[in-house]
Image (cartoon, rainbow, N blue to C red):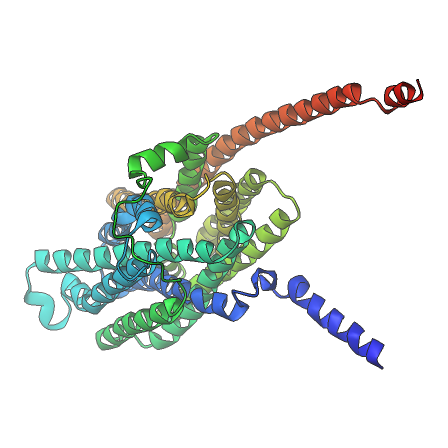
Length: 495
């Protein structure tokens, strides 16, 4: 009976690492519950992304009648702050605080920026659209207030996510860093799924008053989640009053050291190209469902949940494959290749008017984008210099977010330009309403093809370098074998 009990406990203990995702990240000093609590900041980030890229862009374009070009620029404004993510990561690596913290002050400041932006955002949008008593306000007031709100939310989100991911890598051993980052992004996608479903239910009967309640409720929830995430997480170090023996490197020095890595600039170019390919339609998927397929707000908001579900499964698939020795660049290329049929399914929904191809394409876009992102993120982390986790994560996030912002702005502008030309010429007949969307999806397919070409060059270079390393190892082993030949050694000993 005692033997059976020991076997049962051993089997139960083995189930965690095998069947529970990220259960093997727990250590005696860092429990899994503490890691899960730390990941709550990613739920607030996911909620913000759903609001900005999913719910609000549909509401502004369809319900409030704001031009898609204005919406694209507004949603791209938060990403103006994206290039500074590398600076934020570097600053959090070297920050000096009298309380002994490095990451927590950045997370707190970012949270306050998020809260302030959400507090004024719904009123700014109503003024921008000229709804109710706001229809007499000058247009520049609504534009300025909306721009300020989106900038504050974007800056806060970038600061929170960069410092939060750096804190997660600080609390775990180096060998677990890729898994920790994977866990944080899975939490992000779970937050997006849950938030999209909740927002869809709350906005099923859209009214301006309900929009104010939802956005300001999200502001309060972001504040609470981020406070719970960082509570008693970072160890307080003694304040460094005097100048250190070795001064901290400047951002220029740290960036030069980071870029000195093999193929760093080419890798960042691949990240930018692939992100633009997947992100250009982010603000157009829900309006496409509402304008071309005649879906309601609740139905189109659930598209974000479907997109995030695809992303979640994509991250799980990529984590499993990379954990078994998969090559990160090949994983990124597979994600780009999978994006081609995904956008083809979305294009097919316009002439047929069927919802099934659109839903399948939306799911596959999320899956493919996650596989691509996981591959590039793993490659970045594997090649990051020591003691530069914050800078590496910041550089990856900066390129990705900047490319996404440019892509979303271009997507909105291109859609409006094509629509204006189609309406003026009367071309495409019944497909006139979908012409702008289809032009954007076609451009994304071209960008994906360019990404595949760029990643393939990286794969060839890596394969060549790997073959060179293997050849060197074989040569050294042969030289060692000749230097220490066991037969010759035995003969010498016999003599």
